[in-house]
Image (cartoon, rainbow, N blue to C red; front, side, top):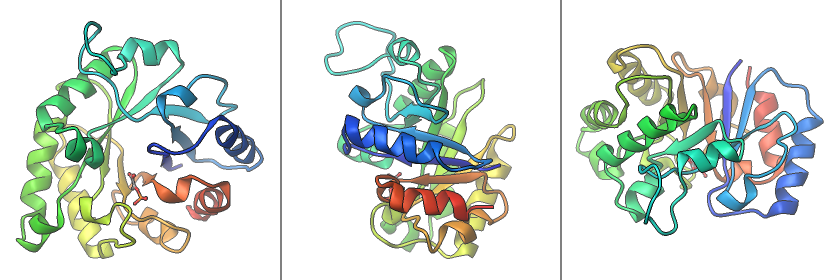
Length: 228
Ligand code: PEP
């Protein structure tokens, strides 16, 4: 059983969510499928698919216009939330410290955070991938509770580029060895139907985080079906 997470980012509408859920319902899979949709699409029955969020506030409640609290996500039936996605880190200045606070508050409310970490192309080219991953990991993970790590090289997201299998195994083994206790580790970044099987089979990989290819059932379902 692998964990396969779709990240719709700021895409989709209610009709598209409903047709994705009915397409997902029509297949038989042993994998845990989690669909992380924009906040207004969260409500409603997931029909066997876990509906996740893409962010959560690091505060319990209060004067934080535009933010959504962990308790609100719980009330909406959410069990998983992505935190520290590279687009949040880049466009919303989220630091490792904020990511850690978000992961901690999610866990406190019974939601499993999917904590994203990954190096930029500049860091990779400078040979700093492993040190960057270790630092991001140690500064972003909470002290207690269960969480999922998503290794997403920033340069691989939405670019059509992926690391070599050797680069991925080196990175995820580093994560595995650095974590204080074993937690599931996903890979994310330009996953498609042609590379999903091979990447999901790499040692230490417990699943995939998929952006663009999760938007349409024509691309998402073949990926789910291709993973052992
Ligand atoms: C993502 O958004 O986390 C992601 C991996 O995107 P993509 O699959 O489009 O590269």
